[in-house]
Image (cartoon, rainbow, N blue to C red; front, side):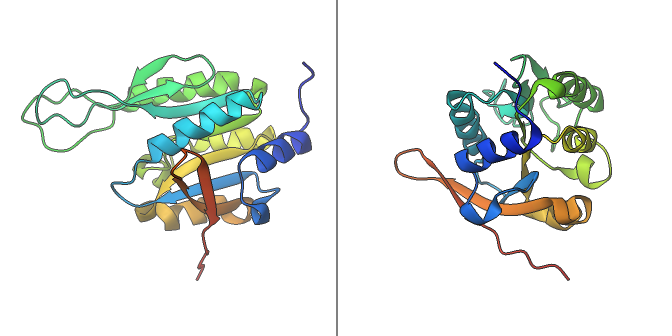
Length: 195
């Protein structure tokens, strides 16, 4: 199969996923509120993209059953190109409060994704989180994907929206997504209010 050029990638991804007025944007932020299952949306996108013949890169969160009652901080990402999983949360013990990101795990995940970028038609990233808001994390993946003219779809919690807007500038479009009763992805353009 002949690799797609940049415009073919964006056209294929746009007609497969985006709302009609979002065509041509290299970055799509899926804005969500706390408690929303953005993982289900990314799983549905990955399934649909694979069926459409797109070569995927990036990571999505892999659901993990809690190891013990009260533990909710086991965070595992799955690299979409290789299928490898990497735990990105620190082991803090049964009495720990809150989650702590394992920066080594995040770096290993980023290295996996970066190694596959030249072969991808679409990059999915589960979250523009605190680390990205502070200048690290997946920012290098996003910038490298842009340099390769490969579209990126990324989850952005509403609390990180201003940091996302500062980072993405005019390269991005914002959307809200949900799954309908049939499990199909429904997108709605998010009205951007920039100050």
